[in-house]
Length: 193
Image 1 (spheres, rainbow, N blue to C red):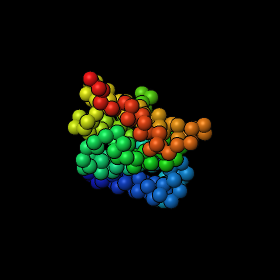
Image 2 (cartoon, helix red, strand yellow):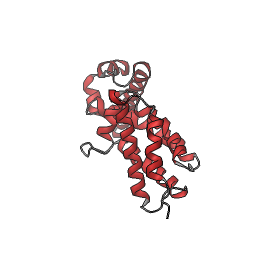
Image 3 (cartoon, helix red, strand yellow):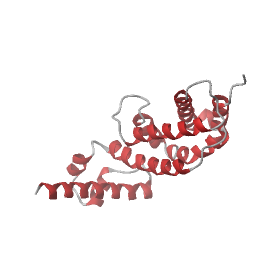
């Protein structure tokens, strides 16, 4: 009997996430409403809260899944040879992360950067991003005078800075790629010695 309950629980959660995913595709992340999600899934609102603490937890899952899909693709690509290629490889992720202000805000809160949220799909995705970028940096013609882990943290910091400036009215004069490239060039260029 317990197995049937577990299967039903998994099916309900899957139905909720599937409906939410469809609603996001139609209306966007911020426009998603719990009421529409439970109506579409054919469950009570209390059932939603049995599976997710709030909308943000559901969005952590949905955005985290999208990040994982992009990371899967990135992991199969050859290592970039320079900072410009690295910036280009990061653009699909940048586009997702900047698709809506709500998405960026949620990523900031859930990435682990603010150390206030639980480790969820977005934070795990950032960990994996660091692993991929670290592998690329170790293979490429990037600076070798500091540990790769520090270079990765710098890349992630510049990525967040680029995204933050994208949502700042005073700094909308550049594309995100045009803003990210100089940061990466300066940070990752081999040190002459």
